[in-house]
Length: 334
Image 1 (cartoon, rainbow, N blue to C red):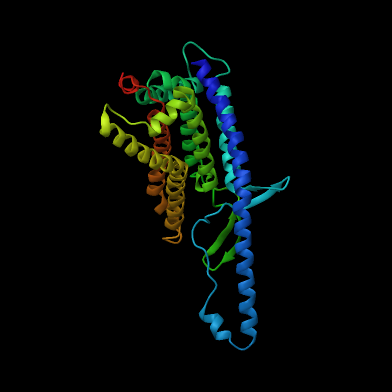
Image 2: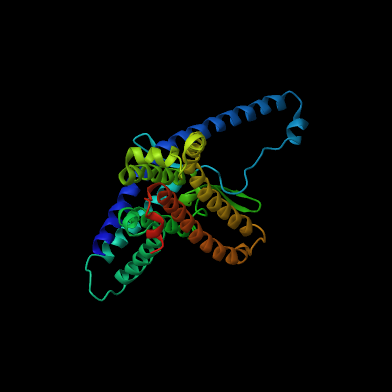
């Protein structure tokens, strides 16, 4: 059990580093696109001003400036480090990862035979997850892959719940309006409300999935699993099955390539929509927005748990489908 704790702590640190690099690279590209669109918007607005000075002020009044409502789809750049943008969602992901690493180290620093406090909670969490994953993958695969699934589940759950802490998304730079102070650039943003984060986690799993598949069944077994005919057949029927399963394998490759996209957008879409809903509820009744939000906060707590569980389950099932041997299903039911 101690080895499992240490492995999870190391994998948290590794995931933290990989996601940071992925966010830095992908964030710089998305921010560049966002800045170019803002420049184009500014140029079009300046054109409206020139057109307005020519005596057509009524046309500009008829087309008011569009104002974005709700949470921005892209993370806001807070600062730059060595030329790389540091966004508000990256700051939250770093804080969450750092807190998890510190907690894992403190909980396992002085292990006792009769656990108590943080050690007791961590053992309960890890042991529960281990038995849950073992019921899906079986003992062999769980021993090799549990470190990833447990790390991803704990990180996603912590990130989802950290986004609900008061101050995340409500503290930052903005301007005064007749309806109150409006935040334009929040200092903090939910980590999974940024598609860069969810895509980075999906790509990390995709790389691990390939390594595990080649490790378990080898290159030939990998190709046979995708294109090889299933079942027993002879003669022309066997030739027909070879063609059919080869076509099915080509479709399976397309499905595999789209898995990172579906995994990332499923998690991002649910968390992004939840944060927008909370913001909309806060503005629904002026002066009592905090009260209207309370039931939706409990809903988002449940949604954060469900989305972390869904991401872990889908990745575990994808791993089982490619890594299982002939006796794999029997192991999964033991």
